[in-house]
Length: 355
Image (tube, rainbow, N blue to C red):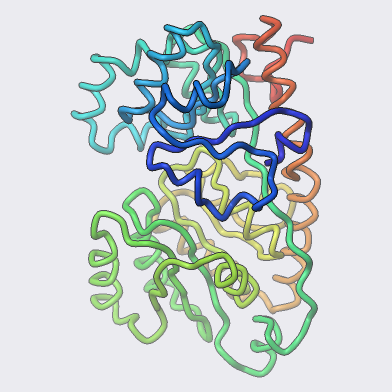
């Protein structure tokens, strides 16, 4: 939608046909909602200047690579952290087979790879695919600031109610929730509760729930399931601290969302967010139980006003660096450089453009 707002003609297609009904696009958006097979989608849109594929490994990603080559359409691939070391090691045998059969070839045929952070770009470059890499961060919506009032987490803390730390995301091994539970059991922050929100994937929630029970944390740790937009916004505003104990993230959009809602963030070095530490809006700790424990101890001893001040710094940071207009302009500049054959092979530049 931001690309359309910046002047591009944009079509959106998804393999599950959800583009036709997604609520992420306003009803009157100029973005074309496209359904059908990959070939039908391209026919309905018309000849695109760029085909931008998000993700790898899946059959539709391979079919798009074949179609783009056959039709002579420049193809851009956002790897979305799927080639990060932790991600590669997860289901490694299946991925090794796919790599040999088609994935390596498909990636080498792309005109450009898009990453969302410099660490991901460096890891991708080490694979020696010989394809230019550009780094373009994800954009994030910055909501209206919630007025300080009775419903805020800080106000509840003043009235001696429990203070809330929030995890929001997929309940899946890569997110590191077992580490968080063990760290919480070690730190046992007085007066705090931990809310875990998000969809269960691959039955991982049962493992996390067992860890909660074994640690005797059932009275302070809760699971709330998936949250729709309004509930998600309320969850951010009702918390005082956001925690992402991840093993690996290419960007970590939920970190930016939490900051946009004025929450300080505790995350690990598995996410490319050293700026939290540098900007005074959070903690960037080792992706270990020891690292997360120390981070929790440092964060949860702070008073509500200090945490609120850190969150305000984070909101300012996100507004300046990850607003949609800024991100859309950078992506359009990258597309133009690709079409003009001016994209570099050096991911060290945040724009990926030759000077």
